Image 1 (cartoon, rainbow, N blue to C red):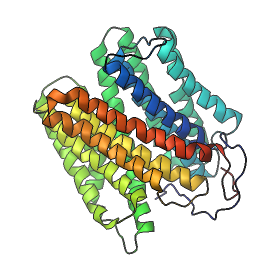
Image 2: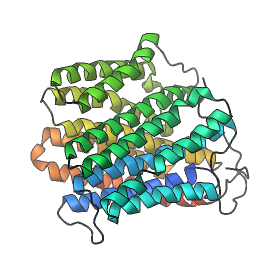
Image 3: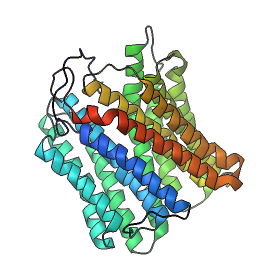
Image 4: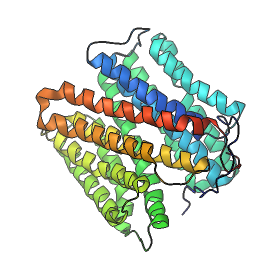
Length: 398
């Protein structure tokens, strides 16, 4: 099975400007900057003090949902895949002017959604994901790498959900738009399920002497369809009981999977620990989704277990690890990395557990969780911006 390889480097001299050398560089930096800024803007809006400037055609909560999924999340996924495909095929999908053009297309979407009329915003914002998917698909087909072709196809499905979100809002069906957003969250969780299933046991085995992950064929075959079914049923109208049953089945499959990974063997290796923590939020999210379907907890708790917990922690895990490896640095978490990990875990716990235990303090929990998120991504940008802009320290390309 092909995994995303990151070489252990031999540090050498620093180089010059290299922002457009490989996909992770501009998309990790731009995505992290936007992820922090967009959440800060949402916190201000939620507190009743919206930031001055142009206003989006999307109402506050819908702008927040759309931009964190299709803006922030899509940027990080694109940066990861543009880098991973180079590792899988030895062909760089985009670099130099072509990479800059792709990044500017993503940025144009963010600007359009923020201030353009609804029709213009929808068209401009809908371009990035399908173009990125086609760029990746062209390289994978050319390299005859059929094993990974499903990834740009999944990116195309995410693009379809983005279009559905915009069309729903323009048709006055905010409920349909939310269902599109929920399905998009599901797509990102399924992406973590696939990629995490490949790399987490592999990375752990490479770092922990004598480590072997336990895999059960029944679990491996069931985890994706059960998870997908739970997300589809959750987005569809109907009784809550089928959703609850599907979500509980998915929680059991995901929980059994990570149990087999023996996370307790990781030890004092924060760069690995955060990957296991991120994945552990997936079964937690499904349990909450089941409870929400039965009316026992708010649906937003499940959504934020997936978004802040699983997706947020997984993103921070990968943008630190791959940025270190692909800039020629050791795969060992530094102080800033550990602080970023801790802040995101705290943000997830506060956002999910706080409103459950003390719903009267909802505003406080949202603001406290958001503050942890913003500081985490600000710290990442402070630490990694120079590394992402400069050439590899070992003199290699990328």
